[in-house]
Image (tube, rainbow, N blue to C red):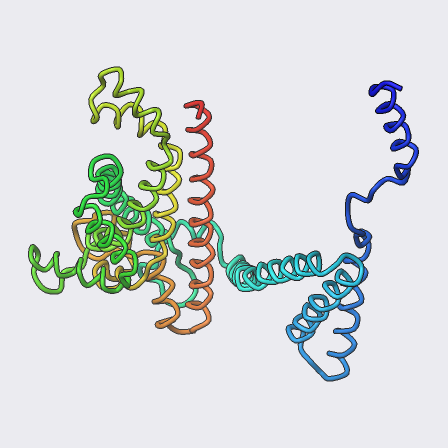
Length: 365
């Protein structure tokens, strides 16, 4: 018998003795209806317990989440094993943390909309508080003041922040100057807003004397708060630009400044626009620095370099602390101004997303 024939017979024998049952490729899994059923059971049990003990809705909700966080991993451990049980436990904790984070946001939004929607109308948006006592008046002067102060702050801070980010990414490298500048930017990020207001007031006193109040001071204070945000956001966007694009430009003999201007900045422009708009949305609601340097007034003032200028955050503060007679009118105006301010912030965030997508689509990146 040849060796080839012997090997053929041995192979056939192995094939006959091989198991015909397929090997399992995965562990058992809980059915899709298990999690909803466990959740419903936990909710019913928590509701019954809370009603018997006289708990509030918040207490019942917390108990239901705790029961679900215990019951689902336990069922998963019995059916799927310890690894899947740990995975489901972490998933429940993550979703619970998200729910906890959303509670104050949703509560704040609902409260502001509920208390402010009845005040906002055409008169409220187009009239000022000049010579208004009691009912009536509006926030037109505060809206215009907020827009002017914030626009001037952006004009002051965006060039400084963008050029600083370009220096850190394109020129400084890992030098000592870059490390010192990055440290100072981090320190500026944590500066309290009232300190920025005091700094702006000290600068204005040098030129205009004691007791100065003007919109330009508010813009200067807000720019101090905006610069570190702009630097960090622009720096991250510039670092995302691939080095291959820079090297290709250098290989063609293009100088560094022109590479930054024609290659790096257009590539990072969508992210830079988004970062700048988010920085503007961050500072548009600051109150303390504007109280110090911009002041408060009941009349419309469109001159940043002269007299006091009202802004929406200061108007809200003044309406609550000095509501007038009767007091309910002042409080209602404060809620209406708060709703308008939130709408402006949301609009700025949406505009940042839309501009980023539009620029990215046009540039093909």
